[in-house]
Amino acid sequence: MTGAQVAAAPEQATASAGEYACARAWAALTAAHARIAGQLSTALARACDLSINDFEILLRLDHAPAQGLRLTELNAAIPLTQPSLSRAVARLGQRGWLSRAGAADDRRGVLLTITAAGKDVLRSAVPVHAQTIREFLLDPLTPREQDLLARALSRVADADPDPTSRPGARS
Image 1 (cartoon, rainbow, N blue to C red):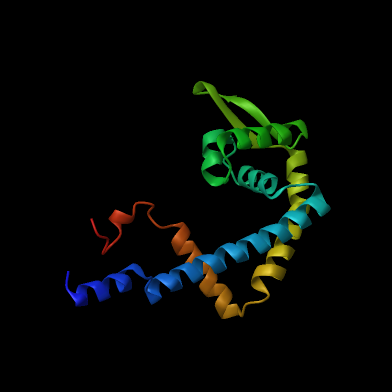
Image 2 (cartoon, rainbow, N blue to C red):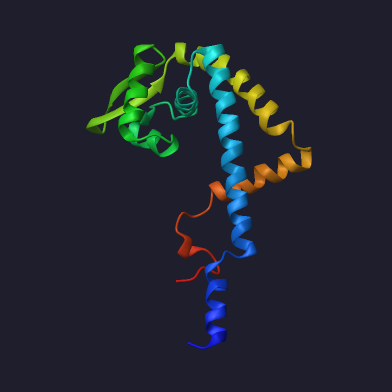
């Protein structure tokens, strides 16, 4: 190895400015999420006796087709393990906020639907959710930043999960 190669090796091992920018963006996103999720958790628990996950489950069921959603469909939208989601669904069912029924096309399948009582609690939780999101996420931003944030996060959320299928991706 030449002296130039030895000198270049440590530089190759250090992070580039772009990599540091990536790390800073990730740290800011996770810190903002943790802060807002904590505020949201407190507000929903205090006002409606709901967890964030309870709110998300009821919200998804409220927007589901009339026949309801299968647990697997709900699991794709809620960031919980399958056993944790099953326990949350069972608790919401015990509170009378959702119902479970067998799927007509599959004897093992179960469809979940929101009940009238579930719609009532969701109706009281939505303004609490909106106020908290406004206060801790949107109010600190200008309207232009709010629009940019919404468009950027939507693009990330809607992206193809296979990075090799993106234009310019390395194979």
